[in-house]
Image (tube, rainbow, N blue to C red; front, top):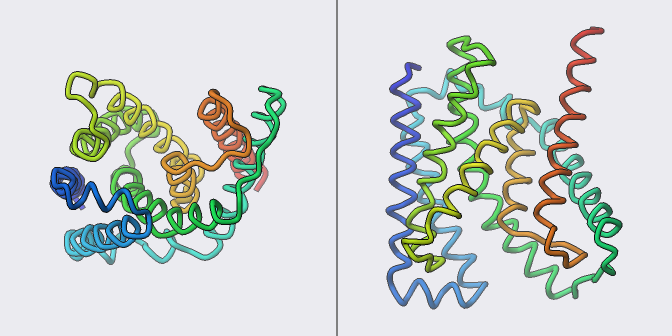
Length: 252
């Protein structure tokens, strides 16, 4: 895989994401968003199309991608456990940091949340993590690019990652063009954070879960600082993960 190969895939997927989001220009798509059951079906349809196109783009490179190792069951189990740890720690820190009473959602709210999370949030995040984190890092490892130079790679990929959301912000979220900078900057920094997390953990399931939760949140404490607490918790757990890996490497 040469540089132009992952670059082509990433840019095509960026263009594809913006193109697909153009459907939200229509009243039909906007009306679907008002009904969460229909929105789930629409999301599954969109992610299926994206997956098929991505699979087609990746077909010449299947043998060198090591997909079996990438999607191993062990990594999935670890990701679920660590994802739950991040969520629980965030709830605890938000509660004690804000002193706001916890509020447990109703069973119907939980059911709705998990259906959306499972069928929309996770597929969307997994596709993006594969494109914008796994592919560039796989190329970097294949070419033995020094870890110090990964910062430049992360910046470029994070810029493309943020630009892939332009149509969604404008047509789905009705963001005025003059107010587009803040969400794009936010997407850029989240892209950098996800890249860092993936480099440290080497677990696409984990980055997918934390990415999905960032897009579709469920907190027990309604604090204006939820995102901040969650971000710090994520970085804290990731650093602990990194130190554990380094200790195992040193004393192996």
